[in-house]
View (cartoon, rainbow, N blue to C red):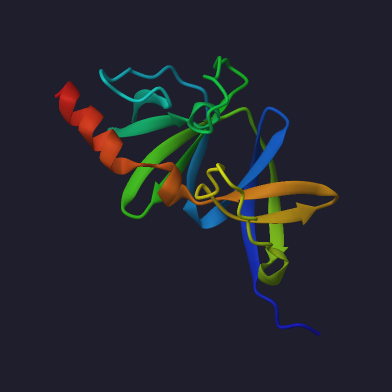
Length: 153
C-alpha cells in the first residue's frame, strides 16, 4: 500500500482542452460578469470586476494562451483564484470536474522548443483524458497588471 499524497484540482475547459488548478487556490466560481476595461492593458486582460467591494482583475485564459479572445457569454465562467496574497479571476469556458490525483502520477511537462511551458506545472491523465495543470504565478504577470491599473488611475 502506497503512502501517496493525494492532490485535488478543479478542472475546466477552454475549447477542447482541459486544464486544472489546485483546489486550494480557488476562492469562488461565478458566472460571467461584464468587466470594466482598463486602458493600455494587454489583450488577455479583460478588465476588472467589483466582487463584494474588492476590485478583481479578470484574465482571459484563451487569449493568454495565444488562442484568440473569448467571445464571453452567459455560459462562460470566472474562476476567482488566490495567487500568493493577490486575488484574480480567470475566464474559462466551463468547469469540468474535481480531480483527486496521486502526486506521483503528475508527469513533468516535456521541454518543447518555441513553446511556452512555464504556464504549466505538470500533466496528468484522468480517465483517458489529458489534463494540463496550471502554474497560476506564471499565468498572472502581476507587474503587467499593476502597470495597467496605475496607467488607468
